Image (cartoon, rainbow, N blue to C red; front, side, top):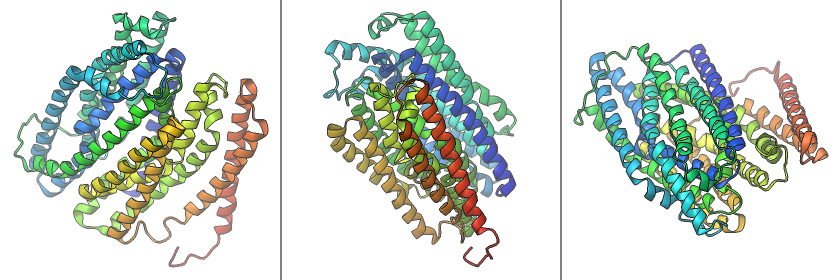
Length: 535
């Protein structure tokens, strides 16, 4: 299997970025509709908690292991074996994965009450009465049972994406989430029409309303999975068969690599459990929903740019490691990191300085001084401090996985999660939800630096000479943009109504103009400069 040419890589990244942008745009619309329908209410917290758990448990069962091991093992088998032998092994891996997903889905459905109890044990800082907490747990339990099949469906989506990736087909997995978002938007609007004056108690007594939210949300994931099958049918996977063989060497390879990966996935989910539990009980109105919405907005630039780059680059990194071409590995890693940081750095700066007014416009119905807006905006600002670190850390982990260094990835994740948990437990008391968010950012920033140092020690370089020089202009322009946005935003200080919308729009337009002007100015200064060996 040869590396995709540079033009093909750019086209792949462009296709994925377009699909991810459409997915994120509809995802934002989904959040806006969710806030419009459920607002910041106990029902919103119950819904968001129940809808978060399947993703977490899927990662524990298979998700992290799949991303870490399946693609490298698939590529190694196709590179070193005949096509027939390779697909026999790939079939055994896929069969094993599907079997695990089925069993896990059934177990989560049965254990739903105990799972919800575990996530709602921390309530020291909440104003929930015992009756409200009991009702919220009951609603979340019922919703979790409706959401349990998502574990199996997410697994099928990830397996399908991995199979498409080894055929260098990246677009479809990025586009199909659009359908999921649209289905859930329709479901939420139907719920609003059926239950315009809902309360947590009224919904708990209505199986029909619970079914609309529960079955409707899972239906979105089902539609997403079904829409991926046409692409799989065209991807020359005809040799894929149901083959249960735990003794296959490829299955054992996944087991060897997956043991360490499973370890850091467990660590990651323990840290996430602590964060979600502390957020649920940190005080304020629907704090878990504030965390959920802020985290979703923080991930937008990462998902649109970084996921696309990593997905396109990972097969090449795995191929270069398999063939022993360290120089090509370093070059591909460096160009990928530069491409991501060129977008993530200015995004993080803009997100930090505009978090509160932006959340007020998007979720606060134009009121920046509302308690829910302040809480969610502060959470987003705190998370933006770790956006660069989060991005770099995830990319470093992908590079280590491509090199099949799962043990090293485990130790990095251990450090990141220990820092996260310790800081969250310390900061939640004085700072509430903001302290929990700040702990996430600090942990990822420290882990990112540590990860880069590990790779630098392994490879000697993180990119070709001069690879990262353009990032100097990006950093300078981002600083100028941040200052301009800060000044423009504070000149108005509007907290509601049309003036708030004008404040945000002016900040974005003038800040973006300042960024582009600075990049252009610094770029002109470098034009005509005679290249050197260092360039």
